[in-house]
Amino acid sequence: MEIEKLLECNEELPGITEWIISESMTSFDYRGDSHPNFKNLPHGTCRMIFPGGEIFIGNTSLGQLVNGVMIFPEKGFYIGSFQNGKRNGNGVYVSDKMHYNGTFRDDSMCGNGTLTGKHGSYNGEFFDHERHGFGTLVCTNGNSFIGFFERDKKQGRGQIVKSSGEIYECTFENDSIVGPVTYTPLTGRETIIKDPDEIKEIESMVDCDF
Image (cartoon, rainbow, N blue to C red; front, side, top):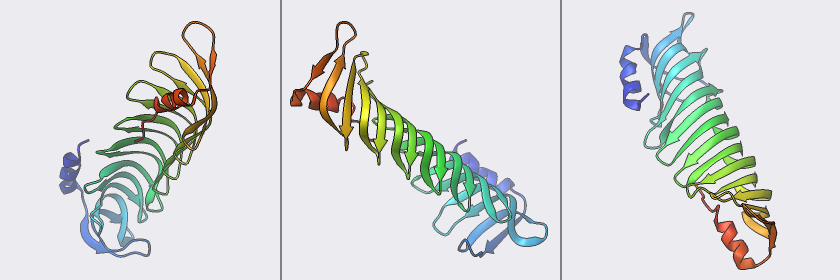
């Protein structure tokens, strides 16, 4: 749903408009349902505008965000679940630079997900907002890397697969290939590549940072 349509829905929300202060949040503008026994406790469908300009449209329970849309002005928006006031669980984050669909932990990409950017896409494991663990990186040139990442950099054994289908088995350390590369062509026998210049060229095949 487009952000403009989401904002239009605000006028249809039932309830009250209040300024509420709680232990976990500073003051914010609230429109929506409240708990039947506690007038100023958000509970149900609502819209909130936070002091920083963020807009939440969705569901709350006993004063806590549960699921919905969080709009970050001039940055992007998030659709998914919340826990303890932060993005937790499954969700989608979209900005003008990236699109992420996967799991979150305390506002960070963490777990399994798919990140798509200007220069390629990555499907695999994340930790603390970075590629970390096993995954597949596909560049816009059609080449891909299948292997392990550590703190957003290629690390350990992996395979570079060219768009033509040729395979290069190699070991990465801090995003750079170390040691020889085993090249497997579409036809014929595999060969070992040791020339530093050739290895640098192979390394550049999947140099597609987001």
